[in-house]
Structures are given as C-alpha cells and as structure tokens.
Length: 616
View 1 (tube, rainbow, N blue to C red):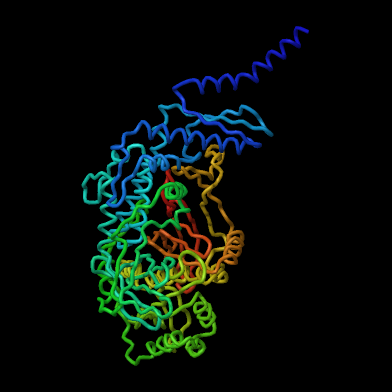
View 2: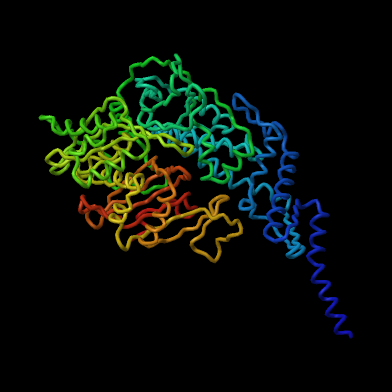
C-alpha cells in the first residue's frame, strides 16, 4: 500500500510540475506569455505564439515613445496603432528565443509560450540586418541603373524599418560615406529616384501607345508601371531599355495619359515572408512622385543604344560575389557591315510578318529547327514589334548575329501582364535564320561583349548561352534544357521551408537566414527535369529577368566559365527572386554544357553566394 501511495504521489508531482512552472511564469513580471487551446498541439502552439506576439507588440508599443516610432515619409506619419500592427508581424520563426510548455495533450491540447522581457530586444536584431541588406542592395541597383530593383528594395527596407522598436536609431553609411538616419533618408531617396523618371509618348498605332521612359535623361534598363487606360488602372507592365507600351481602352482619345511607377511590389512580397507580413499589416506609404501625367502627342526621344552603352562601361560588381582575376577592359566588338543588305532584308521580312500577324509569310527565312522556335515565340502571348528596329550586326564564325528588334508580349492572366523583350537573330552564311532568342538588356549586353580581356569568340559564346538559357525557360524548351545539362551535373535548389519548427541542427541541408529557414536539395539531372516539366505544364507563361550578372573565366578546363546572376522569375501563377550560379563549359561554343547549377533565395549567412570555390 505504501508503494502504491508513493507511485501515485510521484505521478501527481510529475503532472503538476509543468502546471506549477506555468503559474510561476504567469505570476512573474519578468516574463511575457501567451497560451492557446486547440484539438492538436501544433494548432494550440500556433495560437499561443499569436497570443504571445500580440502581447509583445502591446508591451513594445506601450514602452516606446511616439518620438521613437514616428516616421514621417512626406504623406503619412507612422502611428502607434500601425507600429503595434507592424510589431505583430514577427513570426514564430523569428521568435526563436521563446520557451514552450504543453499543459494539456491532445485531443484537448493546451500550450503555453513565454519569453523573458529582457530578451524582447533580440527579436529586432535579425530584422535590422535585413533592413541594412535591402538598403545596400538598393544603392547598388541604383548605381547600375536597375531602378525598379532600387525602388523595391528601398521601399521594402522602409516597411521593415517601421516594425523596429526604435527605427529612428538605425543609421547607415551610404556609398558616398555619409552617415544617415534611415527613417528620413529612405523616403527622400524614394522621392528623389521617382522624381528623376520621365516618360513621353513616342508613337500610337490604333489603341497601342509606345512610350519612352528615361531616368536622369538616360533610357531606363528596366522599370515597372501601371497606367489609367480610360476606364481603370492596368495590371503591371514592364519596360525594358527605355521602351514601354500602353494598351488603351477602345476609343480612348485622351489628351493626356496617367502613369504610376511601381515601388511597393506587393504582388512579389511573397518571396520574403517578413516583408509580406509587414506590408499586409500596415497601410501603404503614398509617394506622389510615383504618379506622372504625360501628353498624348508623340514626342521625340534620345536614342537608347548610345546612352546605355556608355553607362554600362562603369557598372559595378555583384556584392559578395567572386572577384575578377584580370582588370576590366571595356572594348565592344566591331559591328559587321552588311554591305549587300542580305541580313537586314531577312530580319525585315520577319518584322513585317509579325506586324501584319501573317506569321507564315516569313517561314522561308528560317531553317527547319529555327522555324519551330519562331512559332513558339510568336505564340508567347500577344506579341507586337515596338517602333522601328535599329539593327546592329556582328560576325559570329560563318554567320551573323542581328540585334535591335524589340517586341512587347501581353498575357491574359497574372498580375504582371506585359513584358518588353529584345529579339536576337542568328543567321547562317545564306542569311537564313538558324536561331532566335530573347536578348539580354543593353547593360548586360555591353557588360559581356565589352570584356576586352577575353577572346571575342568567348564573349559571343557566353552571351549566346545566357540568351538561349532564358529563352528556353520562357518558351518551355525542355529539349534544349536537357541537352545543355551534363549527365552528371551538380544541381542544387534552395527553397524556403514553411515549418517554423525545423531546426538547423541534425540536418546539414537546412540553414536559417533571418526569420526564414532554407532547405537545400540536390537533384540529379533526371529529377530536376521531371520537376521542371510539371512546373512548365502549370503556367501560361514564364519570364526570366537577369537583374545582374558577373562572369569569371576559370583557370582550368580551357573555356570553363563561372556565372553568377541575380534572377527574377515571373509566371502567370508564381514569382520569386534569388541568386543563380552556373558553371559552364564552352570549349565547343555551339554546344555549351552546364556542369553546375545552383539557385538560392537568399545569401547564406556562412558562405554568401555559391561560387566556383565550392565545386572544385
């Protein structure tokens, strides 16, 4: 009997210990706590976290003065209520210094979560680092002329800044060496950048209007915008190398058109869950300089080609990327003089066929293989030729490359409905087109072709590879993608893991970046292609935008190159942003082979970006 009583006593003590500890937590001023009840432990824990976050936000807001949280960005002031909402966005993944207790198990689960009050400040440190990272990226993008990325990163940094406990204390050293207070400096930068954007109508054909968009007098490499079509605001359109389009409602004869340049990028915020949660919790920040009214009468505009090429000679390198082994020498290849006009005549026939929508009229201009690509391209949305092509020809082996044709492509679905693309034609010695691809923007073109320290053949081969690569994904060319990957290629894909309970310990393929947990999966060529096939089948369109690229020639294997790219991916039902690394063998320029392909959504906190040093 004594033994039974002892066992019962021990059981009661074991059962009551968690409850006693929980009562201590609830009764002490040293802790902030939350609790949740649900049929499952997982759901009860989620509710406990939400309750805890709500109390943390109330505690932070009540212990922070209005002077500390007030951020004036011209048109709005951050109120205590909106600040409290911003603090509420901190997720379970961010609150990794909380403790958990299961008070009752399933099916009537009761879970408690708590944190020491003196630990609260630590939850802001990761977000401070992310604010600085976005501002650094924005400054670099602005220098390179990537104004869309600069606007997005500055605005996202401002949104995250508003969720810090003392936003006015966060300072930053600019590229010019000045120390600034970000809470006032970022709004000024947004207004300054948007104030330097100018737009004007170049031409109108029916209800289609071509516009030229410049930044500080130079054609913009890329910018996103919407416009009032006479009935409503449009979806997001993308301009490239200073050229954009408006598709007006039938009968619109307005004397002026209203444009709104994109800077919030809410539709893309899902690529960063912290940004997404902050944008959802807070009202937007209006920036009046984002709106512009332009005359409907066509205006003359400076030629895009000259301005961009000059600006490209001084572009900076991707931060945290591998360094160059040789000094940069900017020297563009000499254009090929098309004395008899054969090559120009071929391209002109294709342009006229596309303009008239009589696509088959240009069929005889293509080799059989290129004709298939042509049919795929003209079916890539509703395409039309922009303006009058300004053709430049380059000799490539026995053939010729033609650059200078731009087309707009419009789609039925998706938040982003229109893209401007350069079309590059590759022609054989008989002036027949044996390939056509979506071209890189003029900044990237000048950056690669202008690397005078490299052999000219290698420069053309690298650009040809990158343009074929992005075109293959856009046109869903699995046959080409399968052909360019080595059978033993190293393929690594990073993805954000949704489960906040995942731990880095015990799994070398999982790392944590700020509030995000990223898993790296290694694929075989076959498994990667299977996933790609499923992805292609679910999307109306795919569009890749290379925001940045850096190329390094490796000292082994002859013509072996390492390429780092900041890539933005858009489709009808998905979009993301990340860093692409490719190691490519172009010893045979006609048949490049990818030895390594990695993609990561964020820079790894330990090693930054994948590079050639990781794959020796």
